[in-house]
Length: 164
Length: 121
Image 1 (cartoon, chains in turn cyan, yellow):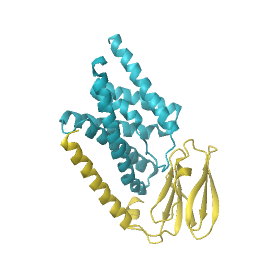
Image 2 (cartoon, chains in turn brown, green):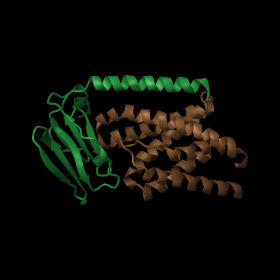
Image 3 (cartoon, helix red, strand yellow):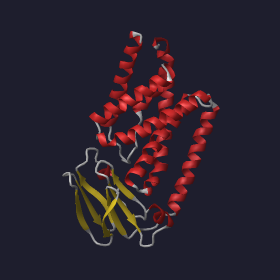
Image 4 (cartoon, chains in turn blue, cyan):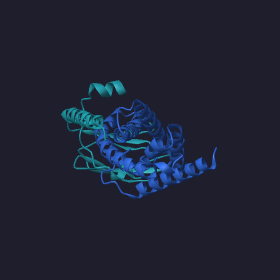
């Protein structure tokens, strides 16, 4: 591995970690399980377009592990992994399909994150009525996904030449 | 942004609206609260009596809930994120408050159970 690559991995993980921390500090007025701003997803989507799909996957998993043990309860790791993996898989598929721009891919990633978490939560607590959260979680996924996608596009345009 | 992005957003908003419509359609007032701990039924409380109840877990964690005027809310819990405490109170059929760290589900049901509940049992 080139030292340049090692350095950018470190930088991206640190950024994702800090964004998760900032997100943790912002109180959500309508708290629903799984509802988040998705700030950390900004780093992941930049990594997907800036460095590569595999690298973004590693980044996402390392972030979830770190955040799970620091700011959140480790028992929620299972849900975060489910959301993170489903989100990455769908973003990878739709990025390859070239059907959507970064905004579309980001929306899909945001919604997939929420849906993945809810599915595991339903299986875990054996309570199908959690499905009632889905529309609200999807709205939050669309709104934050759009903003993150636009923001990510702006960032990529400026930092692309410094990436690997 | 590509044109497809707008189609995606439009399609999703339509889908959400349809889901929301169907969920609101099936809304009826509930009459009892079912408390589930670790996937097992823990206790059933009637909604028409005001009360507070504390669920004590074997590992020392707790959840305190309150029933007031037919509305159920979590007032205190030992979990770190407190999502269940911040959750709005519930009183309609099939609404629920979930505390994932303590694996507690509060769920309001009416006396006649729907087909969906029978299947999920």
